[in-house]
Amino acid sequence: MMQFSPNLITNVDTQEPVAALTFDDGPHPVDTLRVLNVLAKYQAKATFFMVGEAAKKYPDVVRMVAKAGHAIGNHSWNHPYLPRMGSRVLRLRQMWSCARATSPYGQKLFRPPFGAQNDQILFDARLLRYKVIMWNVSAQDWIPQKSEEIAQKMIRRLKPGNIFLLHDTICDSKLPQTDFDREPMIQGLDKALSVLKSHIHFVTVPTLLSAGKPVSNWPIASQP
Ligand SMILES: [Zn+2]
Image 1 (tube, rainbow, N blue to C red):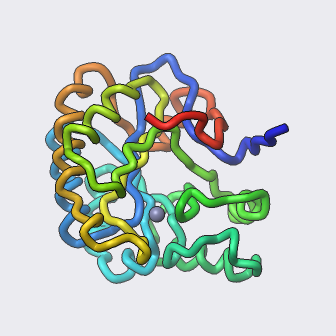
Image 2 (image 1 turned 60 degrees about the vertical axis):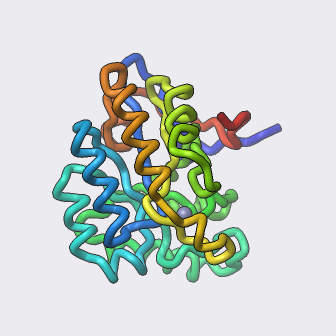
């Protein structure tokens, strides 16, 4: 039997035409700003799950994201694989340090690095009163692909209440640097939003949560 914690949210059951875009691993001094420009073009709001170390380095970008009306969530201090971190204190420190670096803008939303979690990590999040926000649509934008493919993956999975996973930068030393090019994602996002804008309103995760009932359908049964 698969156990689902109500503290882990993959999407929202809603009748309203709303969905959420989420961007992980930033802030980045160039690419995050490019994402902000595309979002502004379509009046879309998003949620940025930031890495504390980068947030501390680029506080102006953190502030710009918040001032543009987007939500900021916690994606740990330096993106470790948390299930391998045996000490609760070390894991909590990852969340505390990120919260400090994104203060006063960070909200009580946590996305574990690599989406890797277990009961202990869900408990950690609960201790610090964080909601764990996963996703139910991934464009797998860390894999090199054409902008058209990214756009199509997003358009195909258009459904109210969906949470989309994207990356404004990529924090994974195991991937080749060439995979980090955000150009296809940014162009794909622009294409997708130009098609989707008349069908669905992109809102922050807190706004999405207020529009319906949270759903915990993890692991994702099928990828787009
Ligand atoms: Zn990440």
